[in-house]
Image (cartoon, rainbow, N blue to C red):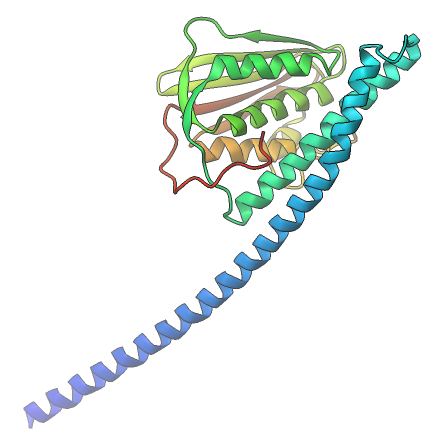
Length: 275
């Protein structure tokens, strides 16, 4: 009698296990289908953004080329008023190009199409090039402090350049034209610190909390809000983090810490649109 009961219980347990296994298989199948659907939607979004980014950046490249000729006065001398208008065109064209690149990077990360190109990066040299290029665009005094031997890390140079460009551009937009913008590169025990500070208008505590949030990232009448979000995502892809210290009328400092070696990642596919 006991043997029969044990057999019945065993069969019942097996039946329960079998039913649970079938349910889990079905659930896994549903999840796989749903994941594929969302991945296809993300792919479609990335493709659309890539097309728009290309279509926007191509005519803007021609505009910026024409602006450079005007700034060099190749086409003839400009009045002071004309020089101001040409400078405005140059700055705003640069900002739209950077926005297109930001949107493309964000879409590729969301679609999991984005992969890392990890290589040794000379952080001093990278910062010097960014500061040199942005000095030509903004009236602010932009300084660079990068003393001693240059810290080298493993990372994606195009992405890091994008992040630093966004940080300096954000400071130039929000600090005010008379503000000093200071870029500092400093060795840290386990990597490097990149600090972008200004003595401008500063932020409220709420603004400081929201500066890296999607849809709220530094958004104002002078900015679109995407640059700081992309900066945070780039730093986090490198295994780092960003911190904000700001006071109204005292200025803002944004500190990005980067490890020497980023987290392990898959095979490289490229960082199109990040440079």
